[in-house]
Length: 113
Length: 113
Image (cartoon, rainbow over all chains, first blue to last red; front, side):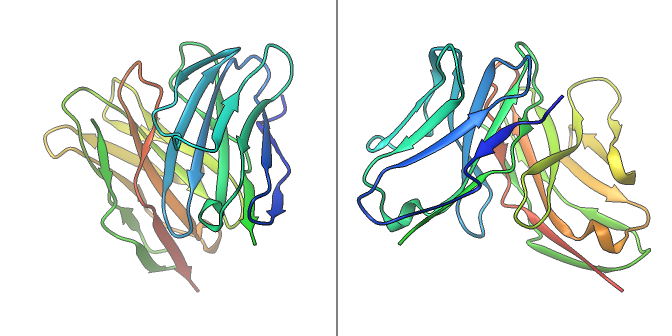
C-alpha cells in the first residue's frame, strides 16, 4: 500500500505566478488535510476535505488560496499570484473515514522568487 | 480551542543516553495526542498516539510517551538514543471529531557521538 503521494516535491515560482500542489491519498482514505510549515515553525492546519466537499477551511488564507478534492483524481491546493511569504513546505495528510490518525506525505517545498 | 507547547526548541544528548522531550497542551475538552518525527527534508512519520485507554503508550523505534491528564502533558521518552534519532519531533493534539491537528513548534533532537 503506497503512502500519501505529493507532487511536485519542489516547486519554484516567480511572484505573481500560480502554484498547483497535488496530493494523492493512501488507498482507501477519503479524507485529505493540508498543512503549511513555514521555516522554523510547526505545521499549521489549512483545510480538511472529503471527496467533492470542503469540510473545514478555517486555516486557509481568505484570498488567493483554494483547495479541491474531486471525485476522481488527486486533491489540489492552488495558490494564485504567489508572493514571497508563500514560500513554505506544504504537507498533505490523509485518513480513512472515522479514524483520527493522519498519515502524511513527503511535502511540497514551494520557493517563490 | 486547543494549543500545544513544546518548551524545548533544541535538545542535545549523547548517544546511548536517555532523553525526554516535553509536550504540554491545553484544552477544554478531551483530546487525542500524537507524536510525529520529521527527518530533514522529509514528511512526518507517526511515532505514537494516545486516543484512550492505557496512559503509557509505546511507539516505534523504542519511543514511549505518558499521558498525564492532571499535568496536561504528553512527554516523549527513549531510554537510550541513537545517532539516527537526530530529527525534529512534533507533538500534536486534536479534539475528537474535529480531525484538525494543532501542532507544537517542534523540538530538534541532536544526538552526539
